[in-house]
Length: 228
Image: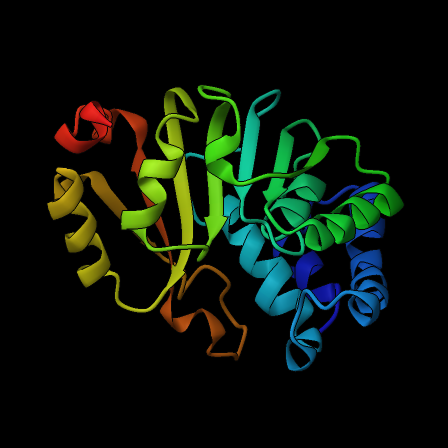
C-alpha cells in the first residue's frame, strides 16, 4: 500500500500535503537503512500501520483535537509517529516530538527538515523532564501502560488539555489498573474503536486498534496525582 491509501481517506488534502505524504515512503526507507526505527517487515506496510494509524487520531474523534495554534506533545515519538503524519495533515498546529533516544530524534529531525515541516520541534528528552503546563494535547502510541504514563503526563498539560493514546487489544484490565491505583473513575476513560474508521480497507490491522482518551479535568483531582 502506498500514499494513495492516505489520499483515499483524506480527499481534501492540498498539493503540499500530497507531496509530503508521497515523500514519506522514500524518506523512511532511506533513513531506516541507516537507523532502524521501523521493523523491516513493517516497512512494506508503512502507510497503513504507521501513517494511517497515526492519522486516525484526527479522523476518528468527533471533536478534532488538532486545532490552529495549539501545541501538541508526541511523547515517545520513536521514528516520528504519530507526530509527523499529524503535522503534515495539520500545518497550523505545532507539534513537539520527544524521545529519550537521540538516534530516533535524528531520524525525526532529518525527515521533518527534508519535508520542510516548520510546525515540528524535535526534542531529545524524557517526557517527565519537559516543562510543566506547556501542552494543549498529549498523544502517544503504546509507549507505556496507562498506569505508568498518566503520572508522567498530567503535569505537562494546560488546563482543559487532553491525553490521547493509540492502543491495541482489550484495555479493560489496563484501565481498571490505572483507575484503582490512581483514583481515577473508570467512567473518565473514553474508548474510541478504530475498526470502522477506514471502511473498505480489506485488512485486519484496525480490528483491535483503539484510541483511549483521558481529559485533564477528569483526573487532576485524583488523590494520588493530587499528592504527587
